[in-house]
Image (cartoon, rainbow, N blue to C red; front, side, top):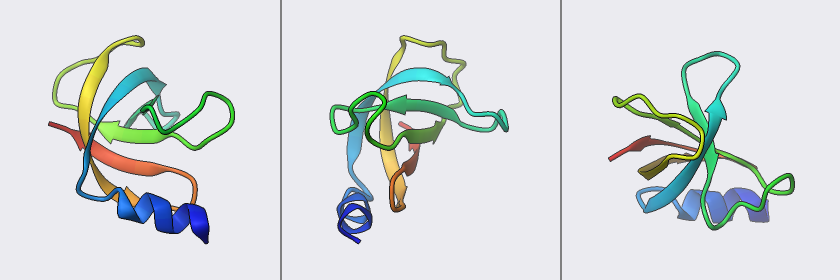
Length: 75
């Protein structure tokens, strides 16, 4: 419950995200912001109109906060 509440509080905020990969469904990019530790915390799933590659940084507006992950769109 705590994780869900914290992630829902992030909705509407803009964060810088390090692009790591593309999701298995090919729809979302997957990355992390300063708030997600590698291999420990959830991920940031996001869309982008511009093609991205691993290592790219992008500003993402958080649109959905779930229990472990957040989803957003690049801005």
